Each structure stands twice: as structure tokens, then as C-alpha cells.
Image 1: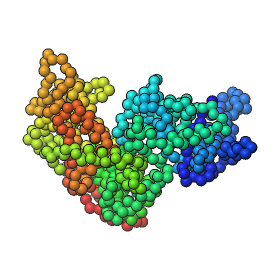
Image 2 (image 1 turned 180 degrees about the horizontal axis):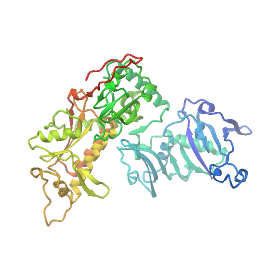
Image 3 (image 1 turned 120 degrees about the vertical axis):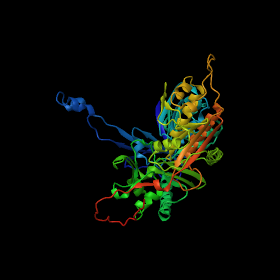
Image 4 (image 1 turned 60 degrees about the horizontal axis):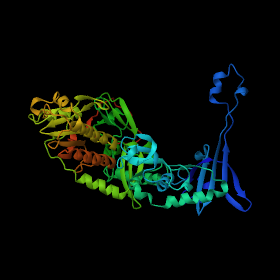
Amino acid sequence: MTTFTIYLLREEIATAEDALIDKAQAHEIADGLSRYGKLFVKPTRARPPKWAVLFDSYVPRDVLGVVQSTSAVFIVPVDGRLFALTFGQGRFLLSPDAYEERFGLVVTLNAISSNALRSVDKRALVDDQNSRVQNSQAASALSFGVDIERDLVRGIVGRPEDIRFGRRLAGADALTVTSDVEVPKLKRLLRRYLKAFQSKDYLVNFPWVDQVRQLIPKGQTATRLDGLLVEKMKEAWGKNGLVDGCWLAVPDIVDWAVVDGFKFTSSRSEGVMTDLHLPGLVQEYLDEEPTLSFLRKHYAMSVDEEERVVDRWSVYRCIHCEIDDDGKSFILSAGRWFEVDRDFVGAVESYFENIPRYVGPLPIYAHANEDEYNKAVVLGSEQRWCLMDKKMLPVGGVYDKVEFCDIYGRNEIVHVKHYGSSNVLGHLFNQGLVSGELLKSHPPYVDLANKEISVQHQLLADPEGVKFVARDVAKYTIVFAVISQSDKPGLHLPFFAKVVLKSVCSRLLDLGYARIMVAKISCDPSVRYKRVKSVEPRKPRARNRRSRGV
């Protein structure tokens, strides 16, 4: 039995040599007039094992032997396409944009039944967490905890219904299969895999798989999209940072107790912005050309009150960009390109537009941070609100401590967060979901909350002497309020944040909440730039930067 790792090369790869990025010795694999393919082999230099140095003082080095590995790729032509079978470290001989993305995943999905999965590799779209879930028995995707809207399935393992496919298949970009097939019969097996890859039958049992797929970094499609991104950025440079479908967002969750603002350079004369936005980047680098290299090598930084750097990210990672190209929808989020099914985009956008907008008393943001804003809202509300920000309820268990919300009043539970990436806003929505689930089903939750809530805003206590099952939460409204510096009317969120919000809203409504609403908290223009510190005069920079007002 031999384990094969199989890649399907792209249609534009005309010869075996076109797929390789490293030189390797070629060997024609043939038997008389039968030509089976071409084997490329690259052995590594023999060397002592890494642990040998530990015993150098005690044992001659030649006694410990040497280790050596060989990288190999077997290129096999089948029906006008080329397959690459890799052995050892052979996958590193292949160019990363030479092979089809998700070939192995699609073949495996087409070869197995919907309840025959043994292992699932998945990635949460908004928090960048990768996980592998295995099951001792074959099961469906939902048994592996796959959220069909919020998880990106990267690979699966399952037993095919037709034993001719192999005893077990593992599919991602490559297809891994263990088989006793000999070289002369390889083409027959590969032809079966090619036919499975070209089939759309998997959409009957796994229709959600094509909703979102991550593109190979620096692959052919991602490279083309990077070129379109650069064109959009050039347009932004000519329009003072205002361009449709492209903006900046903080990619990670920020500790606002430490972070005072954001900068693009270490210059004290730059000033500190209260949020990341594209116009600020353009003004800082107006005379530079926004090439891909520029976007990857320049940084956005969070700073404290002394303008010391707290964290930094490449500008490229801070960009959220939505592009339609060649009849398809693509999204750049947290430095990764995704292709998104247009029907899925339409469903998410439609759901978001139909979420009720909150028009209650939330004033304009003109404060140093979220904490100060929440306090000011409560103090100026004539007891309309009570402050719950930073008041952690010790619920124990997996959550340990949670916030009930940021401000509360008249059965309205309001969660407030600065605008950010899908990761940041997803954290806001999930906080609201956790609190909402606990209010519905956690017996001590009301008592814990009432210890922090002012007397006039107390939650209705559970009836004494009645066995607790679940609370009726129909009188409560949950509001997600986002502090946004955008001058555009309405609330605009990154696409994957909308995906999470859709999921959270559906679950909260299923729990029985009256309404789930969103709100935009607009910013006073005066807080967009906090200050420009006075500094000693110095020689001007080589480039002529436009001065910035505050």
C-alpha cells in the first residue's frame, strides 16, 4: 500500500517543468511504448541528525550515522490535464499557484455521503482560529460543530461510498489517499478523481461549502486581486482616501484602557488619530505611490498616551476591500482574500438591511474613549440609563466572568464598541449573544446582574418556589451600537461582521427576545485627531508632506 498526495495542476500549466520552482533531476517513467509520466527527484545532502551534537564529546560522529531525505514529484498526464503526485518533501518543488485550490476537498465531498465524515479542518471566519475536530465514528458536518455560515471548511477526511476511490480520502487543496494501485493503473484512478472534481454533485449534500473559500496567498487569483486593490488605492490617493468598497479597520481587539489612538509613523508631528481611516493614511503619505510593497511594508500603530507603540500591523492587514471581478465577489479581510458566493452575499446583505435601526437617545461621540462615552451617556440621561460597563458578573463555568452590557435601561440592553475589523465587531456581537443566552437560561444571572444595576433599573426577579426552566425574555431589546467615524449615512460593516451578526440575531430571536437592533454612533469631527504635540523644529523630510489640521 502506498500513500499518495495528489494535486491537480491548473489548465494553463502546459508542461511538467512549468509547475516546478526548484531544479530537480527528471526521469521518464515508461514501459516500452507505454509512457506513464515524468518523475522529478531532488535528494537532500546527507547530514548528522540534529541530536548528534549532544553526544559529540562521547561518541564518534560517524557512529551516529546520517539522515537524508528525498523530494519527488511524479507528473502524470490525464485527458489533457496534468496531475502532480508528491512524495517526501515534494510539495515544496511545486509552485504554489500551479495547482487547483480545493481539488482534494471537492473530490472527497463528491465521493462520500453526508454522514460519513471522520475529521474536519475548519477556520472561524472572524477570529482566525483554526481547529481540527475528529470523531471516532462517521458523522455529519454538524456533529463536528461546523457553523455553516461562520466556519470555513478547509479539509475533510471520510470513507468513500465507492471503494474504487480508495479506502479513505483526505481532501484539502491536495487529495491524500492510500491505495495498492501500481504505476500502470494510476491513470485510471486519476481519471476517476478528475471526473469527481468536475462534478457539482456535492452541492446536494454540502451546499454551504461554496459560500466562502479562502484563496491561496500569492496564488494566481489572489495576485490578480492584489493588482485590483492597488488600483483602488491609487483611486483613493486621488480622492483624499474616499473610495467605494475599501476602508481601514483595526484588525485585532484593542485594550482601550491602554490605547490612546493610532498613528502611521513614529513622527511626533503626525498627531494621534482616534481611529484608523483611509484619509489619514493618504494624508500622511500623499506623495508616495500605494504599491503592494508599500501596503505590506508600512504600518499602522496603536499608541498609548505617551505615543509609545502598543501594537502594530501592516497597512495591508488593516485594509477591508470588497471587489466584484469576472462575475464573482471577493473580499480582503485581515490580510486574506476570500471568494464569496454571490447568493450568499445577497442573503447576508438583505438580512443586514432588514435589521431594525435603533433611534433611541445615544448622543454623538466626542469623548476620549468608550469608557468616558458610556459614563457620559448615563450621567446625561436623567436616569434613563444605568452604567454596566466593566461590571463583570461571576457566572463561573466556561465563561467565568461576563458583562451584562455597557448601558441598560427600560428593558433595552445596549452593547457599545468602536468600529473595527470583522474580528473586532464579531467579538461585540458574540458578547451580546453570551449575555443574552445567560439571561435566558442561567438561574443566578438576574441576581448577579441586579447586584450591579441601580435600584430603579432592577431586572424582574424570578418567582420564588417555582422550579427554574428558562426566563421569558420577550420584553427585552438588545442593541449593538457601533462608534463610527464614517461620514457616509447609515451603518456600514465589514462583510464577515455581517455574517456573524446575522447568526447572532437569529439565535437571539430564537431565544425569544423582542427585537435585535443596530445603531450607528456618529463622531464629532473634533475627536478625529486628538492632538499634534509641539516638537522642536527639525530638517524637513525628503518628501513634501501635506500639513494636517486637528
